[in-house]
Amino acid sequence: MGVFTYESEVITAIPPAKMFKACIVDGDTLIPKIVPQAFKTVEYIKGNGEPGSIKKVTFGEGSQFNYMKEKVEALDKDKLVYRYSVIEGDALMNKLEKITYETKLEASPGGGSICKTSSKYYTIGDFEITEEGIKAGKEKALQIFKAVEAYLLANPDQY
Image 1 (cartoon, helix red, strand yellow):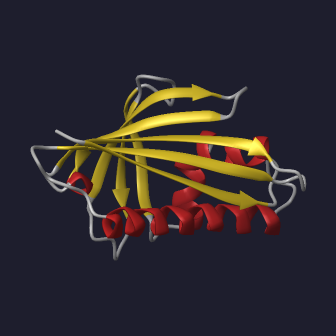
Image 2 (image 1 turned 90 degrees about the horizontal axis):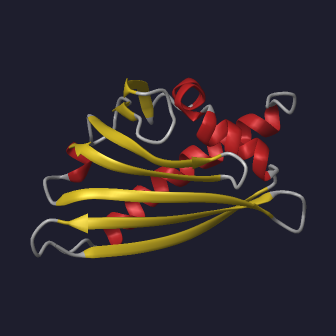
């Protein structure tokens, strides 16, 4: 088994607490509403969002994947940190044991925020993940992030 780590940063005009609440805390209901082609449904199998919760995400029409199950590892609403692992589903392609993501939002000098994400891919056997595979997933995540940002800019009274 190998572990491959990928880090990224995205800057947004939205303040950190507002973006965290929309994207992370309320993301399970907001994202399917504003980006239904990404996530069709999100349902909790265990818990309701606190660490230890498990949720099933059903992907939207046109996705190459059907579903994934995520386990919430950490949720710190004060420090604006969220960590979860994809533990099941065709997104793991039978080649990954799991993928763990940690997202942290910090204030940026201009009043917006910097979203820092660290992704760890735990491979099965000697499978090596490619940079192209990681970039494809990151592009989809960026599209969702930008859709939430656009929604908040268009609806400034929300959150």
